[in-house]
Image (cartoon, rainbow, N blue to C red; front, side):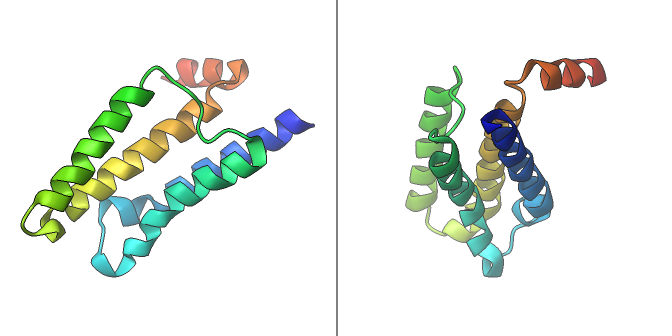
Amino acid sequence: MKERGILVFDLVQMALLVLVAPFFIFPREKLAWILLIIPLLWMARAIVIRRFIQPTLFDIPILIILVQTLLSTWLVANPVHTFSKVTGFLFSIGLFYAITALLKREKLLKICISIF
């Protein structure tokens, strides 16, 4: 039963990311609060599943690139110009971890490989 609940949570997380994808791909400053969806999903995952994200081999490189991106956004003269790049990067990180969480199940992994 617990595994089924985790699967439902992972599917809801993926569905939410797909629904808000246009806001990340074509961001507007007025809708910047939508950026909070990814950290909120991860916090909800930490509460429900007791794990912040599904661990991967890419965690440290992603963290390094994330810190570099946030620092360069902070140091640039006009951060508005980098807003679209930062939102796209945050969306790609969220999507990566959502797909990783779903594909840890062997059945879904086989389906995705056969589709690919």
